[in-house]
Length: 263
Image 1: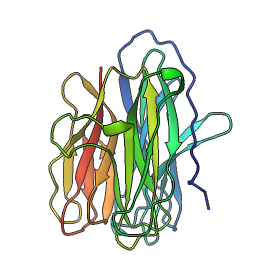
Image 2 (image 1 turned 135 degrees about the horizontal axis):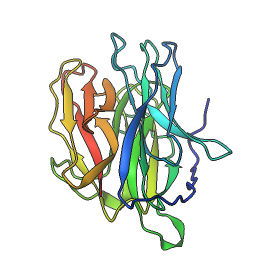
Image 3 (image 1 turned 90 degrees about the horizontal axis):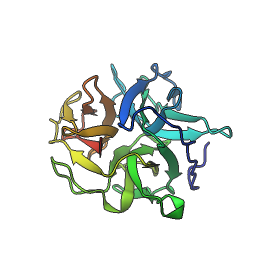
Image 4 (image 1 turned 90 degrees about the vertical axis):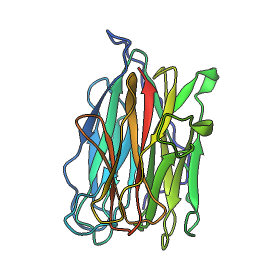
């Protein structure tokens, strides 16, 4: 079993680009196996920096069984987005957001395990050393016990661009869970400003979705799904750069949460 209770930070190598514009693409893995804890893995390409990692359980069946996602950093600095299938699950996708910009650097930090009560939190906040300004660009949640409410950048739940408090990533344990871990991505020279934007609530049936997109002049760097009621099938990013959260059939709602950075 992997220990996520320690803080991990690896800063990407600064790379010169021909344009100063922030450009991002989405990279998605194949579907994982269906055994408990089977993994799906995806990496960025070339000089891209991974700004977020999310997972999605497409079904059919096994809804609400996702174990979430985390970012793995190898000894050689290679960065991988890892999604984990939960018990009785039918497989998950790992989805990475991969970005380029002149001198873009990203680092990765993990929070301690939350408690096992409903709505207990794991959280992490970090600032780059030497006073370099950095922004939260991605926020992930993972567990070994499937009951997760989700993850989100700490902000007011508004359907407009809103400030992220203290660069804080929050992961939330669901009812019946045994604890979750948060993983956050912080990038310097990604933008002059990064903010959160929440969707409206979805319907309560399995497969109901909630969708949010960034405003003109802002670029999607991270995408999350959150609910109070577990049975959260995660989120994915469309070709139109929309962040879509999917209800696993909790009878209530999920919300999509985008992290948007100015071009």
